[in-house]
Image 1 (cartoon, rainbow over the protein chains, first blue to last red):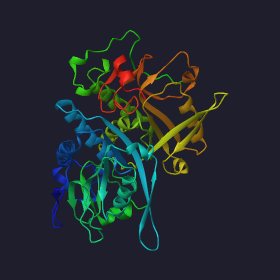
Image 2 (cartoon, rainbow over the protein chains, first blue to last red; image 1 turned 60 degrees about the vertical axis):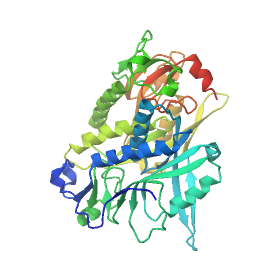
Image 3 (cartoon, rainbow over the protein chains, first blue to last red; image 1 turned 60 degrees about the horizontal axis):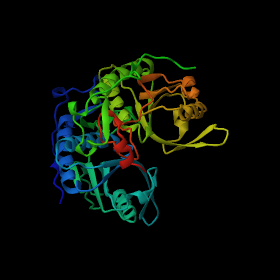
Image 4 (spheres, each protein chain N blue to C red; image 1 turned 180 degrees about the vertical axis):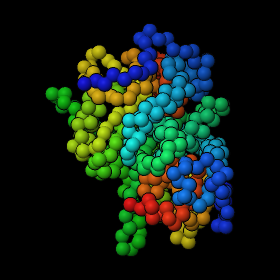
Length: 215
Length: 221
């Protein structure tokens, strides 16, 4: 059972004034829920846990675009730092995929994997899927069964966030940064209609802002 | 026509730095000759490039287009600096990110044709300030073809950013490329590191280094 940092449902969060938040977002956010430094510290530990389990063999780090790229870049930086300073060095290749999910009437998911190298390249490797947030978990479950057909040595999933939601299928990634409430979160890797990319902390979006930045 | 912008010029005689002066992953110790452009220097240059980009493009919705796979490291670092600048501005600036892969096809007449894989519908570029982020420009043919393709969608502005750029005399195409923002101009050496891979290796190397003969053999396809 993956350990993770729990942000409880009644988490008050931090006042915006205690941190640096872009001035133009001040009226759009309620609270800072996860400060940027905390995200980085937790990510550093995830990197260590991952290397401990997967470090014996060539790792293919698979980034799920677009949301995953920020967390992917930071996680890989920490993994590289561990490479520099430890006895064990891990050859690391990277790849990028996009996952489009299609739900049919019987609500069994099918997904389409776009981009990425030939999935057959994954055979015999330790595959690490890097995702920003898992909500229902169904997309990830479908992706995993697809990847397992390529006979990798090992497949693990790391997700920065897992949402605590009744819609969850029960799937839990192998490595979890934070378990968060079912609230409207923005910042760090999570944008809202292309806004909030310049916000480093994860915050709760207020109602007015949802309207303001609506498509 | 080539837009000449100032950039850090690494001369042909540049020897680079001894590997022992820096931190290199242990598994590459025998595979590299010298450190050519240290990671910190890349970041410092990138920080300045971000400022220049914002000066030219910051007034309008930016679409930052990352050319995978080599471009992702530069992309992430450049965007971090751009975001830091955004944080201190007065307005909320929407910034779209997108990721594409380019496959180039050369026919006998060596007119390059390229296929753009992934990415949102290119029509979303209409009216936006498009910033293409690429890791290295070699002959310039692929980029030239991509730019012509993107022009059809009527973006407001298109700029190309990359950190090291090869300017080879033997490839006149590169001289006609509208490369607007250049990090470094480098000699024609076999460099790896900071997302410049050699058959998928060296992506986990922070500094741009010259690969050794041992390395070339070892990681041969």
